[in-house]
Image (cartoon, rainbow over all chains, first blue to last red; front, side, top):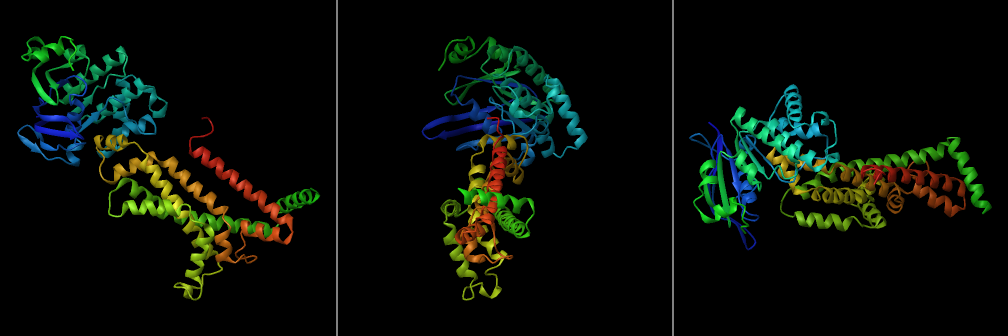
Length: 242
Length: 231
């Protein structure tokens, strides 16, 4: 069984703008869920609710592991993590950035070193453990942020356009990491991306948001080949939707 | 000009010959100001950080008071502490007036708002995304606060150094509550004021040189804490 999150009629309003306008969905546990939609449609807000960084104004966000509900709180926060579009690294070394979440989970020192080393090697940053995070380029920082999430072996991984700072090689490494994590750990992945090619390569299930609502969702093959809604078809064919 | 040159020569003699009076004054100044900054930091950094990281009743008032007291005139602080510690004051029975302890209290009163106010500013300026990242990595409660404080550590160190700079250069309050007693409460600043008044410039210049060196050292530390000289 795998951890997942579902939203029921979630409404979130910032000032006069309704970022989520009654959004409902359930992400497939243990699968790679790709979340698509034009800018400002509420994708990031949805991820922030799933990461428990925000609470809805109305509606509910429910977590479950198989048939069992999972209560929000510290334990749940330690079973998942979020990688944002602009990587946030602490003002310390790469190793300490990587080790932080593991230490919060009570990992032993040897285990921390091993996992950090493995994760950095995986993203091609093996020699960077002692480097200051502030000295990294945008792409290197993003690789570290992805490796940091991988090292945690989360049950649910939320990603907000994580490969936007990466070059093609970095993007390929990232996709490999994601597939590896999903295959080996059964991690539920929810990824926001604007890259439709990447979405097609990664998705087991796809979700399309528009105007703060979840317009369409389904298994990847059906979603990309036979979309039901006209706006979804326009979006995935590359037409401008706003 | 000759007076100044003679003063410098004699002052150099006092410094290199390890004149006991000169070094007693320097040591006492460092002890009093160091003690005041230590106490102010122990109380001020947690208060400043709490005001930046927690929501509690009266938080805005505390910040307002801290900001106001950051510019509190030292002589007025000295007067207030004097009134509290004088025989007829509420703490007069403790017999602390004209002692190094009274000077530490006065300087703590002056330095505390600086350390607390600048610590608040430092912690409040840390990006909210640091807190969120700590949360998404599984931290909670005090661990999240500690992460934010760690990110502000250089600015908080700057606050402590700025507090020390203010304390070591302060003259009004320590003169009022310490009395400038030779070999007991005479500090660098009070000695300079007195020796200059007497027209005895050797010791005043020697102390002035040391005070300048201390100020220089404090500035170097401040610069290093803010990220070094490379920028």
